[in-house]
Image (cartoon, rainbow over all chains, first blue to last red; front, side):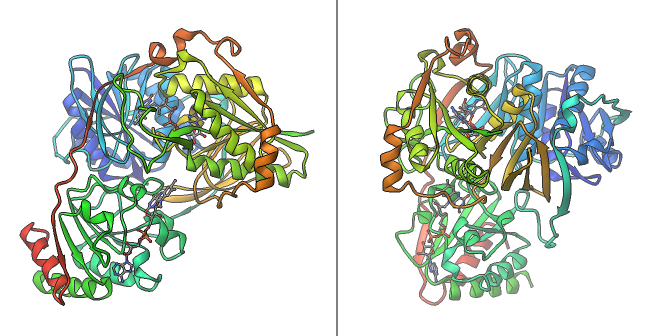
Length: 320
Length: 262
Ligand SMILES: Cc1cc2nc3c(=O)[nH]c(=O)nc-3n(C[C@H](O)[C@H](O)[C@H](O)COP(=O)(O)OP(=O)(O)OC[C@H]3O[C@@H](n4cnc5c(N)ncnc54)[C@H](O)[C@@H]3O)c2cc1C
Ligand SMILES: Cc1cc2nc3c(=O)[nH]c(=O)nc-3n(C[C@H](O)[C@H](O)[C@H](O)COP(=O)(O)OP(=O)(O)OC[C@H]3O[C@@H](n4cnc5c(N)ncnc54)[C@H](O)[C@@H]3O)c2cc1C
């Protein structure tokens, strides 16, 4: 069967869940060959082999951390030449999309970003995209070159599948452009101990209706009771109540969890763009006319200051 | 030496209107009003601030590639304070994918002349967020993208990029392409004086011939991707909405239990 190149998203060797979903998608199209770049790449092998990677190309060069984007494009370009895959898949994120697009241009191939699903088709992979704040579903194909497709988290189930997982060192010759943009310093985001927003099965979000940053404690307590990630609307982020990394929406993260709980969020189109594809939506808002209720599977018209703590208590009690 | 800044802006359908697709599966521009992409206002703002910091020894050119109406986006940026505009318009551009669009933008930027190109983080319609990177690849200059903070000093552009797992400080020598996020600073409103002054500013109109580009390379003809279907998503069926009578939290917990979340 034809090979499909899967770009591995990992932090110091620990593979992030969306990459495992990508391996499920890749198996529909052919045999997954994984490429892991950067410090700790070698430590990804076992997990990748356990999820269907037949080969794993590894390169731990320091350039990936010291310079922006181009070194990774160089590496993937060599990987494509080596493997000659029928498609290249990568997880949608700001940086990965840029890498994918530049790689596609070098390959003279089309690129599709933010697929929510990928199907095998007669004329190559068909990418399902969600357009205009998820009000349309489109199906597109790359018609020239090797399809390069970026896939959003939560687009496929994680399915273990044993495979050979043969490790190979990827020899990369960096282009002169690789050193163009220097990373002068990097500070890792502090871990909250809660699940990663884009990967979480449950997301609990707060908006302007919370009234203050302190009141985010209500949201965090509910999130902890449910084992959920915490999200925020842009109004709450702009007010300085919660860090931008937690913003859900068009210019924040887009999430697609099993359950999304919105409290004190009106449901503006830009917020909906980031959460509309959640499987189940619950809204708590004191305004019965708030547009968020149009999306909600279950809604409570009421004051979040009383509803949310009561909910948290009841969830904790039921979980025993 | 003066700093030549080009700001790339896109004219997009208003997100508060009914956006949709035309019969040929390109964006329907008849059914909904267009405007300067709100995220590109941040790009214009940062370009103006960089020019101001250069003490007036800088020029800001607004560039858009799009249909006739797209000129409105250029006008808006001019009324915010940009010096001049370029509008690339050609019937053969209809149906361009991001590869075609980036080819045209790159050619126009080169023709305009630049030390720094400033883009938004993403358009509000296609939302790919990749055009700035493609532009850098095509122009053979560094990209310093998705910045929440940006400045230029002594021929070096630097900025902060807040990514998924880390926050990075980046630096590159000019010429370069940057893109800025909506965290980079509120965009100014056009003043009355600005709006009046904009009427006198020059907007050049270029077509493919002037950019020396073959029509086969752009539009639907030159696209490397194809949309097969676009289907409106059924509206979510309205769920249960109940008024809190003192037991709202318990009701939600019951609902969550019924769906096996607790
Ligand atoms: C280009 C662009 C990009 C954007 N990107 C994003 C984005 O990524 N994410 C995003 O979220 N927004 C984004 N926005 C902003 C968006 O348009 C809205 O302004 C924002 O989502 C509003 O946030 P909110 O719902 O928290 O606030 P509001 O709209 O002010 O709503 C607050 C809600 O809380 C309710 N409320 C108040 N008090 C209580 C209470 N005690 N109990 C219960 N309910 C209460 C109110 O009834 C109201 O419905 C963007 C806008 C633009 C122009
Ligand atoms: C719903 C939808 C999905 C699409 N999906 C794909 C796809 O998967 N693959 C594909 O190849 N094409 C796709 N397209 C087409 C693509 O969006 C256009 O070709 C587009 O002009 C470039 O991408 P973008 O608008 O997403 O720009 P982005 O990459 O999001 O734009 C970033 C920045 O680039 C600048 N910029 C973008 N367009 C212009 C312009 N015309 N003039 C001047 N500056 C500009 C602006 O500064 C903007 O802020 C899609 C279009 C739509 C409407």
